Amino acid sequence: MSTPDDDRKITNTAPRGHYPVMLEEAVEILAPSDGETYLDCTFGGGGHTRAILGKANCKVIAIDRDPAAVERAEEVKREFGDRFVFEPLNFSNLDKLQTGGYAGILFDFGVSSFQLDQDDRGFSFMREGPLDMRMNTKDGPTALEYIHSVGEYELSTVLREYGEEPRSKKVARAIIAARDEGRLSTTADLAKAIEEAAPNPHERIHPATRAFQAIRIKINDELGEIERALPKAFEKLKPGGVITAISFHSLEDRIVKKFFKRMAGRPEDRRDTSFVQDRIRLGELITRKPILPTEKETKENPRSRSAKLRALRKD
Image 1 (cartoon, rainbow, N blue to C red):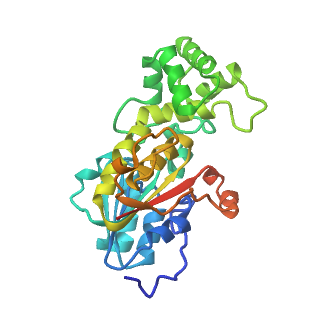
Image 2 (image 1 turned 45 degrees about the vertical axis):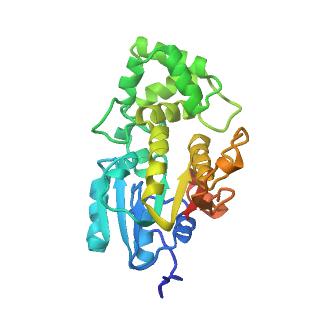
């Protein structure tokens, strides 16, 4: 059911410094309606949640495993009251939510601006801080603890598979050497060790970019979280409900693309040799190809450059 406010403009009302990626595109696909309930699986700064709540007289359940998101969620609660509920939860555990029958579910993968911009979280090589990198600062080993527990071969594999680092062996050797020589305790130390051992003067990105991504993905089990969450999210959707997923690198996008195609009864990729009669259509692809951020958005928020949005509607 449409509402009189369907044509109201979507604006970014998230806390200052936070840019919800592809805000207008995501909310347009979700098409919030009065009386419906939506699930924001990656609350972050609450930008997408606020936009959904501002678009219709609906309800949003939001989850996030980052303890720092709790305080930001309280601000949204004060503004929207009972229309908003927050649960401190990994999105791979969304099946633990007592609610269901969602009209729309949103995933916005990767690291939030808040996490990147806080020195003590250790996500960015541009800011010196402890080598933490945990999405949930109360659970699991830090990046430094992981590096101290791993061998060169395993670290090289992680850098290659999760960071798509072409010099994975060289970078892994440099990190282990810095560790063993007592030169590794901060993000700056890690970035320096990589840059000195494996500079990339012909590339636009910093030499440590892929390594930081790989270690972060590993210690937070980010790809495993996505693989476990998508089927549970689809199960929680009402018929006609929509899943919208925003990815930031090929590893995330590949998981989303294959799952959405499988639910739509289509071949998952070029290597899929399954018979047509064995495929079961449970949904419809809203996006045959991913939606990309506008030029205007990438200029205002360079972190959105690699974003890809895909959407699926449940039959």
